Length: 147
Image 1 (cartoon, helix red, strand yellow):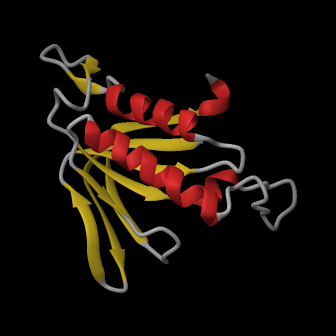
Image 2 (cartoon, rainbow, N blue to C red):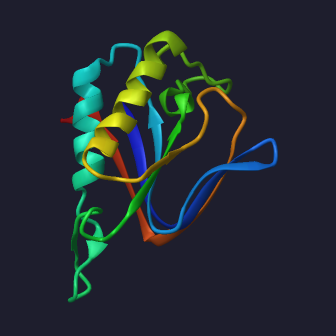
């Protein structure tokens, strides 16, 4: 599983002109599911998202986790994170098929909610417009294959 985590103020997802998810302060998470991923990877990624200490403390140091910072999460499925770009036309054979990806995407969302986070989402497989203001800028890539 691969997640691109951006600290934002604010972020939103729009589908067909309708805002379907939005947060004011927190993390925009673009989440890609690999074809070999399991629930173990989903739990691990959720743990990293929920515990990443990149919000500033009283001294201006990145030392506060999202829960203590009052952050919200906007999690958007993003199969293109597994693009193979060896040729100019990307291939996506490493990305999980929907029958695998959807339950694991939903597992990450459920894990984050079980930790008390307000989680907004996009819609799996939809043509989405994602807008965000990168706060910092802070952008972190988390990949289960790097643990």
